Length: 124
Image (cartoon, rainbow, N blue to C red; front, side):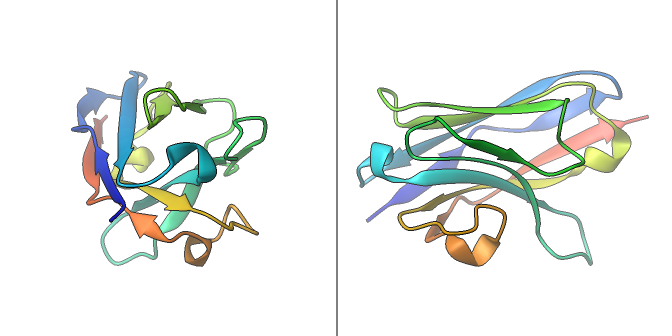
């Protein structure tokens, strides 16, 4: 069974950086497109970034462009989200997701498996 385990998030000051990682087990990592989403209380889960199975294509939410970078290492079965210039509005629980046949990388229903989520808090 496929499992996704995210690294611990953390507390960072505005303007700071944080790198999240997510490891996939129980499946062929290189077959999956990977995505990062986030959720704040009382709001729907929103797309942050995604990367194709090959790593050749990446996708970003407008709020992430220029500040966040998604990458993957198929040899380590891991996907990463480098977050720079963090803002208080980036505070959320971040989830990684994996999908075998992702048509729309920005849509959460395209993904088959989800991590447990990790809290990122950005203080002002």
